[in-house]
Amino acid sequence: MNATPYRSLLWDAVAEGERLPGFGYELSMLRLVAFVRATGLYDYVHHDPEYARAVGIKDAFAATPHIGGLFCRAVTDWTGPSGMIRRIEFRMTGQCLRNDMLAVSGQVTRKHRADDGTGLIDVELNIATQDAPSVAAAKVTVALPSADGHYPATVRERDPADVILPNDDMPDFARARLDEIRQGNWEPRDPLLASDIHLWCEALEDWNPLYWDAEFAAASPVGGIVSPPIGLFFGAGSGLVVGLGHLKPGAIVPEPIVRDLHGIELMSALRQELIRGGVPFPPPDCPETVVTNAVYNFYRPLRVGDTLRTEQRLATCSQLRKTRLGEGYFTAGENLLYNQNGELVRTTLLNLFCYRSQ
Image (cartoon, rainbow, N blue to C red; front, side, top):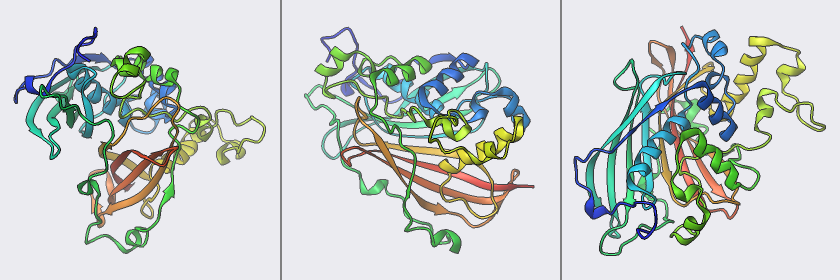
């Protein structure tokens, strides 16, 4: 892969303590809208400043996968297309607001080998804004080829250590749901197109050639164009949950539209339906939700032509806690995403605080 116009990094050339080049990213309204266009994630707080302010947020802000995508871009901008991200864990300590200037930086913290000899690099990353030294932080593990000819496998099995076990003090209402498997969103339902991936690349300015250069990708170990590891593609029809396309013959009209609600009242009611898709096992009497951190593990690429179905399960749930936001429960819900062949592509663990306002 080094005999190409694209620079690729070898594991041997990396030193612990090395700093990544990083980049700046202006979170303009255009980029927020471009992310909605690419993903089909229509949550109003990520693209409608007026609605965001109406629900107590300073302005429209970047969604969780938008932040995760920027962290992944920082790693593969540095490694080149040879870098295969295996895991990312990130936490938002603030919000990346519309018109913020984001500064994405990183540093190598560990250089090691997996049991099979694959060269691994651990990187810590940070996003700062003009107003705060850190609004999000991440830890990423990326596999790299080494000078001895060892190239990272593009497919791997799930490590038993990746499985999250339930906590011993889980409340009874949550423990009763441990064996439930909920069918979640398709991401996407229709076969993924190269143009879908290109829209993601435009929104994040992520131009790894594996995501768009068909000739290069076909000759690479992945064998064709693939999605960025954290890429999210709800696809056509995903806007119905917020009312887009409800006049289509046969469409299931959202209940708030049937009730003839309008304006902020309509948007708030529709958003509750949207949130329910991401919080499949809500604790009782806890209508509000914030993401505290997210963990993604990657097992095989999402390819052009693939579809993804989601299985959701409850992993952990705390006892009732009181915070400055209100009383509620810290929960962890796991999404397992399988392609059309039943192969595990990735897992997503979202740690949430589900609460009722004081």
